[in-house]
Amino acid sequence: DADVTQTPRNRITKTGKRIMLECSQTKGHDRMYWYRQDPGLGLQLIYYSFDVKDINKGEISDGYSVSRQAQAKFSLSLESAIPNQTALYFCATSDPFRGDTQYFGPGTRLTVL
Amino acid sequence: AQSVAQPEDQVNVAEGNPLTVKCTYSVSGNPYLFWYVQYPNRGLQFLLKYITGDNLVKGSYGFEAEFNKSQTSFHLKKPSALVSDSALYFCAVNTGGFKTIFGAGTRLFVKA
Image (tube, rainbow over all chains, first blue to last red; front, side):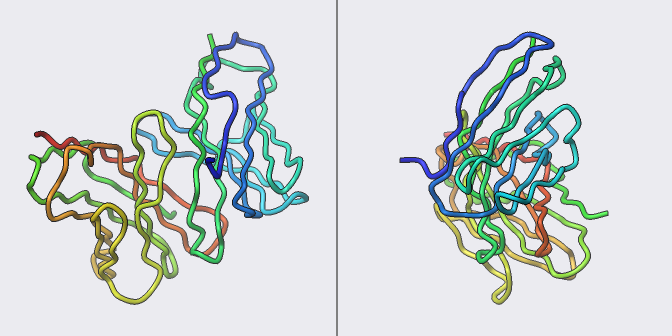
């Protein structure tokens, strides 16, 4: 089984809709992240969490919110989706004792019409 | 500001030839340097990292990378490319804090 899982894998939604992307991990890491990938821009950090009670904004948090339900679960919400949020979204965990090596989920391809 | 640059959008190489994917960085402090690979419809996978020690780092699938402090570079190399190496490669840097900075990615195309 994959160490980091994301649901759904693909989602098409309409402008103005609320949508939630979910992430679960079995690696036992405290640190979790949400990234957005756009062609030619690499990965941009949306939110990160170092434990259940610690949530921080990344560089592109506007229009997004997160919830850390447990050590293993970290969900990303788009409160009112807009077309320029169409992108590939990745959840990741990291191990600070291995130089913060990141472990990624398979991604969610989100299309906002 | 801290940054990572991958100067080539795409690298083309024939199967069996050596390959190099370039990465330079600009950070304050001592960097932790990483390479990740992304295959189609998959998440990024860790390839190798440099934290300290030997400047030549060996990783998965026969890849290696050389840390050059004076040139602030961390180029990814492989002596003999395979068609299956075709993928998107990301260089990344962390200075021991919370944030890992990723380059924009380089698409490697290996022709049979």
